[in-house]
Length: 248
Image 1 (cartoon, rainbow, N blue to C red):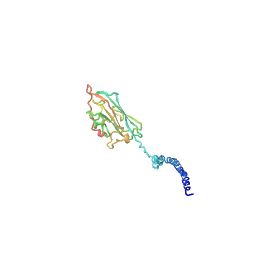
Image 2: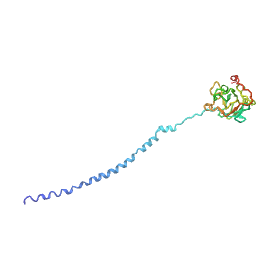
Image 3: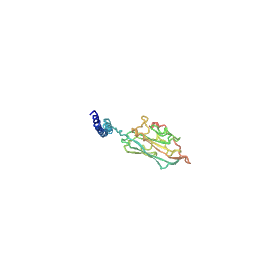
Image 4: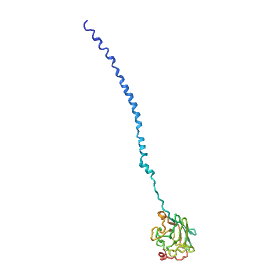
């Protein structure tokens, strides 16, 4: 009955209950990924940018701000509608008789209401311009040209026919002292120009106030003429009269 039976019962009960910690990792891993992705898509940046652009007060005011546009005041607008040669051809000799017919029109919104000049330049040295009289711009020794003085009112949409022959009535046959034309082209003539409201020494825009647009359409050119010397000499051309300055 000495100590041999005591040590046998001690080690058997302790190792069997240790595996309990297996429940801890199961709860932690499954709940974390489920909650994180559902919150993120609801707070994207797309809706913020759209609201900021459309609700800006400055942009709204600029779009609907009223603009005041003032229409240009009504004015006359004189134009050279056509230049016609009778006979209607482009080749002549110095003996051929020619009539020049010019049509001017008031295409503006007011009558002309003032006298004005219409200049016909035949072969000028340079393209005619305002206040350059045709006899100061000769490109040939013949120095041919016509000046018509228009004294009546040209109504809205009204046309006026100007002719080069002496049989025309009224103001349509040119001012004699401001004209050098015997009814025949000089040899070498190629171009004709007609300038309406051509001369006013007191105003760079002539006597008729037409506005910026109206002042740009006062000139018309007829080109492509051929004039050759005839076998028999025609009447000698006369130089323009020095009394032109008195006529204008």
